[in-house]
Length: 244
Image: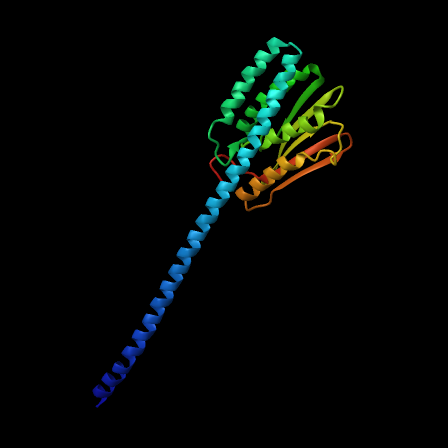
């Protein structure tokens, strides 16, 4: 009698267990489909971000190109042929960097080398009137940053301040590390006020958007006037070579 009752109980439980298992399998399949869809959405968002980042990088290059050509034209008008030849040599190095495929992040050392090609042209153009100083923290020197970040800050300093300033022109490039963050500052003693430097907005906004696309941590881009100089600052997480 007990055996018969046990069989009866088991026969009742089997359909219930089977139903529970089927429900669990269905839920697992739904969860798997959801995770698959979520993963595809994440991949799509990353692709869209990469496309947007590349478009932002491309927008920077023509402005820097035109400014370099304008600097060399000034040397040509002054008939400074030897300086013009030297400037063209620097410009060729600049073009080589511009037409090299860039990764999302480059070493600051490489960015500085590239920017110095542009600064060499400006130094030939303005001569002793232009003073360039560097204040570089060794602890931050090996960091990575989006390509053309430094060049944009330097270009803006000349375009909106130094080119029209009479007398001595001063440019300071400073790189500091504060814990897990890096602070890059480009200062110039141009005469114009922040309000008149509306053109700064496009380049700085470009840098800001690229930083936001690359880093989930705190970043900041700012422009301010203090005493007799204009200071452009970019802050981003310290990212040594090989890390992202």
